[in-house]
Length: 93
Image (cartoon, rainbow, N blue to C red; front, side, top):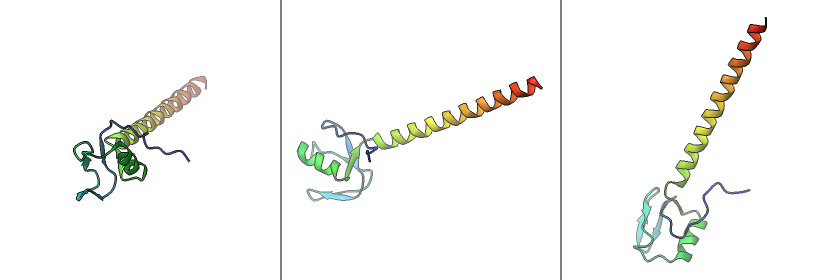
């Protein structure tokens, strides 16, 4: 099953996906993870991301919001098409 998470980006900005400790600091869910300031290597950053501790900053909420918006637009389009179809059928009678 393909993951819906964005692919790993070495230069990206990350936030904690769940609570964890790194180099004696605790990062709560949603907290920014300043990996450059912490001298976190790219390999360790990838491991944290791959194991679900980190996510790209803003990636998942944006994706969810985009899917919601696409769903709303599709529902509106279906509703309009149904109204047009009903109106055209009423005009034929």
